[in-house]
Length: 196
Image 1: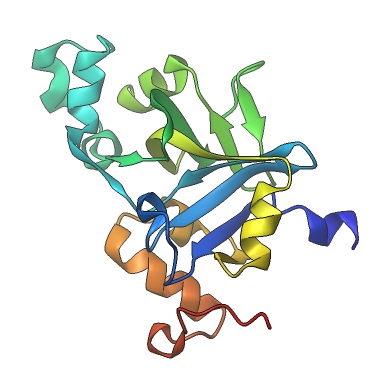
Image 2: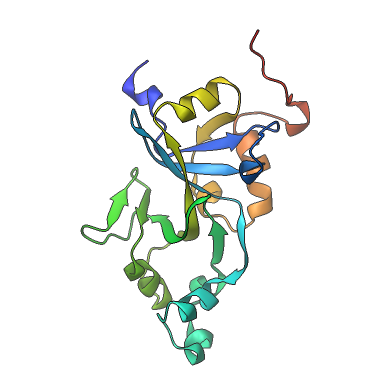
């Protein structure tokens, strides 16, 4: 296996229909880092219950309550998502590569970066942030060899990432769109592993 095909940084994991871990049922996970030491990613299609981006900005004291109505359209429309079961109170912002904070932004590929500081939330609230962004609370993590094992046992498929799958706002449609990228009809997928 070459290094390019072995590590899936910047790719999207697609949970198979038989995914036993309910936290990942019908989920897409953007892989931010994948190496021999493990993997880290952010779920792309699970909304955070009852929390809007303007609410979060007020809670974090990034903006005062009266300024909610003056937020740029992108900030008003941004959804807060559940990024995974690890560190669920910490924010992870996946965003377009047009935004960068020295010593805080991790470029994942040519088009997507990850920033975890409050600075990116302030920038979005002020209209000077990245052109595209999604905010997730928490992340998904795998120890060394765990993700490879789950893939081997048909827990996950993977596909190339694109802007709509990463940043699109129609969270319900993302799962089927990812499968269609692979030419797969969800109705034809088996819940059983194909290992004999």
